[in-house]
Image (tube, rainbow, N blue to C red; front, side):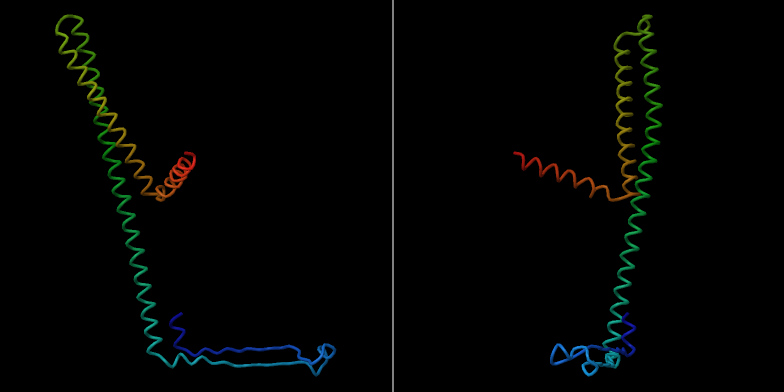
Length: 179
């Protein structure tokens, strides 16, 4: 649009109507009025100002493009990071599942050996503690995997925070008004 200012602008205006001194003469042939006007915008002669506006428009377009590219790159980085976190959480959970199964089997075998009389009860307690630690680690890993998955969904879809804050704000406001 700024480039269009380099060229003259012509306008053509017209008016068609009636004009009469009394209402009876309003629609007679002598009361008709016609006007045609031609206008020229001479701003194209000030080419320095026009070129400065063009340069400013180009700079604005470049700035908007840079902001857009930065936004896209940040979104891709966020999605890639979330995907890597989720993949790492799944690998960790897989290893901890194997460890929990092995600890459960070790605890079962310790109970059997205790019942047979091969080991004392402290070794059974130690095996059960190891089993519980492994199960606790697995539960924490499940939480990390779920959190990473939510982060991945958020990175791919975006906008959840704004939607989640609205109901929370409404519930806070209703709680304040009810007291």
